[in-house]
Amino acid sequence: MRDYTYADLAALSSRFANVLRALGVGKGDRVYVLAGRIPEPYVTALGTLKNRSVFSPLFSAFGPDPIRLDPLDNCTSSC
Image (tube, rainbow, N blue to C red; front, side, top):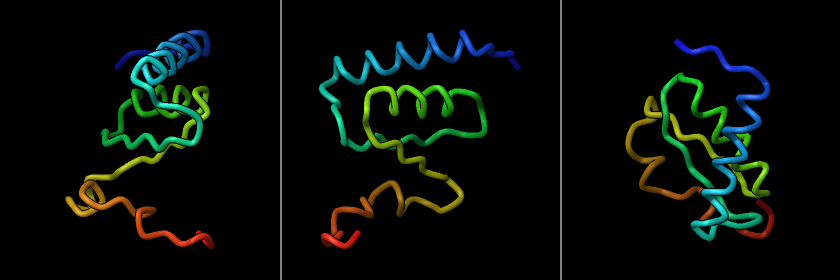
């Protein structure tokens, strides 16, 4: 396992935010991440927030349904 400093997290999350921007992901867009209990989800979470997007983690323990279904697609204005 690798140790990360705050400077590492800042640099890696900024790099991820730049990748999101290059892919056309913008403010308010949802970014779903399916990853295990490793450091990378924290980098993606911070990078997504730096990009002013919405971070949504997916957990494999819930099975394939969360991956296939977007819970906000059927959302009303009260969500």
